[in-house]
Length: 287
Image (cartoon, rainbow, N blue to C red; front, side, top):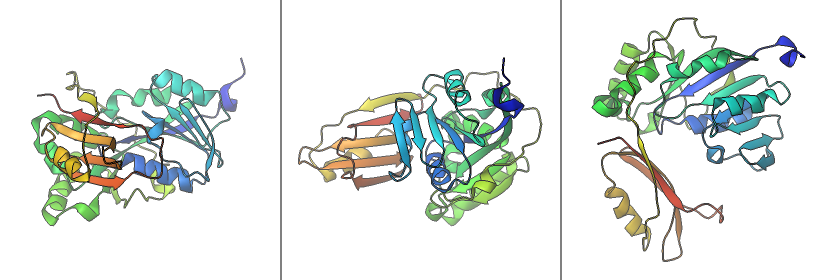
């Protein structure tokens, strides 16, 4: 059998961080500014808003870009996604975006399979809400584990953080970051050379024996009259909802894209993509 890629092993970086920390924004920036061929693996390829000028081809579960980068879906698991990468010309680097509730220690072993090697774990920390997440018993363990495993910590949402939130977040990074370097990213903008090539230590990572709480994922289709009704609907979301994202079509003919992260939300008119799927996916912690 011919040796895969001539025996060269491709470095793999895992992107970790709680729901809404900004992982997809960072991926978009990496893809748009890439000076190397990246293979990006994500849970939902549809979340990658690729610049039309970069898009070469889109098929089920795969996006190919004109700069040689490719995005593959993790929907069918790591085996299928890694096999997809192995079937292509050797990329320069693989970036895997983990679920916002994932414990990186449970999946880093995939980076040691045929053709690949672990480069590091990069954890994004939303400094506006990091302490709030850590303070909640249902999410505290997840936040701690994502911070502890990091080889590089990226502070995000700095423009939204109060002085108190920033100070509290910094204390958590110092407490659980295990000496990892800390850098800042605004709107996902971070030099690829900072994210890729971390060369994380070969330390042993403990995996939790307990099974983490399963988050409840639902797709909702609210029947709303207008933008004002949407605002009230967002305010009435249960406190257990930690993330909500999607498009709402109101009966007055308007369409709105919403992005809810904890207590923060953003709503913009959806006019650029008339075929955007209608529906709001919510993720809630179990009661």
